Image (cartoon, rainbow, N blue to C red; front, side, top):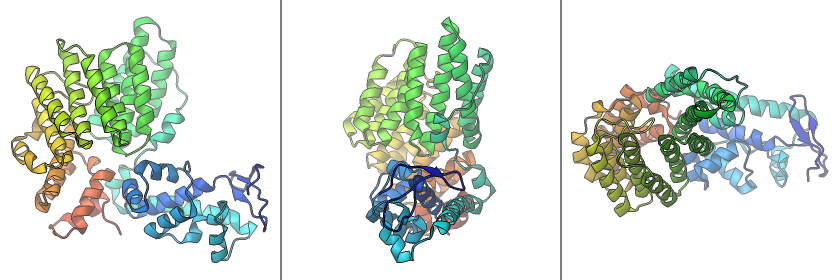
Length: 451
């Protein structure tokens, strides 16, 4: 058993002394060290957290917590991770975890002097593995290395208030990065932008405070959007903070934007029905006779339809799609939400994704044939539409059409095609039974090729 007597080692990492026979020290950072090794091995093999979790009996969010040291796993589970990721058991520093000293015994055990050295090697090796994984995918993939939003949102930098017009302009520029799929740059600027928005809000009064709350809400909306792209649990944090700021602003559009992000986080955690309830309630609260709020209502209905589809509720999904289509036809020129427009083209793109989720991709073929993706105003939306088309063809077993759609995703948004979900789709083509010329080079370029 570890006694609660922390002391720093040569690296400045706190650790505990032990009262077990053999008098070995048990580092309090052991979970984080094990997580770092698991993350490094996963990245080196170009696997997503969802893929690892499915193989080892965990959800993607649980794998994320394990890798960040926030969730401890038992010996049997850890050995499943080791076997799947091809990690030698002794590399996991298992002897530092209570109840797992048998691994160290098999490996021959470490002396106290070796303990600190091993920790250095484990941490350095994990970082190197991750770096090699990114570098091996080429310069473009290295440029798309994700920012750890979960850490950033809980450790915002110090920031001073800025003039409100400048803050609004900075949020607009960040939105531009998102719409242009410049995710790396967006992740780099968001923490400072959020911190500046909070500082500005804190010193503002009256109408200026409402506008600062709006800017803060939209900065958090972008953080939630980016976290969703990265399959990060930070989407929950960002969406919740966005909704709090939006409600404080008193601006219905902002509340709709933030509610959509919270519903997406719910849906991704398996709570599709709850997401639908939230979205339909927020949509009902919006004025259908005002163009802007009605357009926001349309986009909430679209997200609700997809959420219902992921929960296999076909009747609700199709009903919400029909309602959204009618709204879009009445107001074809209104932009809608901060990051999603309310147009007939957008409705058709959503319909394809809904039909995919319902398991009837064949019903989307005619829609895809008439869909004019080029009419969509942002690279992010065009890339998303081509992604849904790629998923449709993949579900129908048409590898050449799937590959053609994925190539269009890359043309529109190089960083989008390197998202974990897209890399998994590319890997499916690469290792599938139907060979398509050019897929291997595409997989290598986008980081989906496992070496």
